[in-house]
Length: 184
Image (tube, one colour):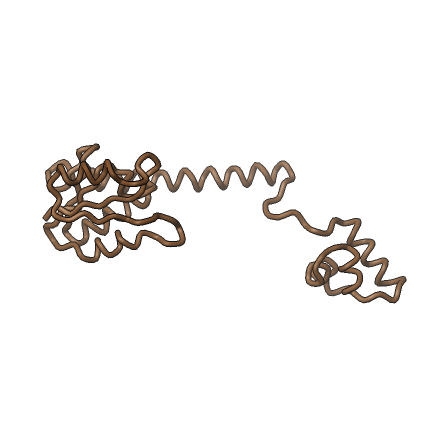
């Protein structure tokens, strides 16, 4: 059975073109993702994949209509392959029910893995270069060395609580404690 799937894309938020293409492809059922976000996930797609049976074909109008990243496409295609479900894209003419179509599965997996490795290598190289230039990642400290020195001096010379010093410096008490360490 041909089952279509659509999700909002940058140029087809209402999914009208996707639905029209899937209807023209004679899909028996079309599942529409209502919204796609990292928080909500792909709730409709998850349910659809769970309901697919061996021999079914999942059809999308374009590859970007399946997922927003190459890695996610690869993951979905692997899930489909494990269930014995075919996959077909109309625009890219990928059809895993045909002999050459299975090659796309493997090509996507290799390309996706390569892409993840490149991103990881570039990130590590960028962080190392930043460290070599004397930069650190993360948020800037709220208390610079001068303010820490002033806080220590106030603790030694005045009868002032850490809470009062923290308020005077405009930071939370825990920030001051962390900056002063156990010795103060």
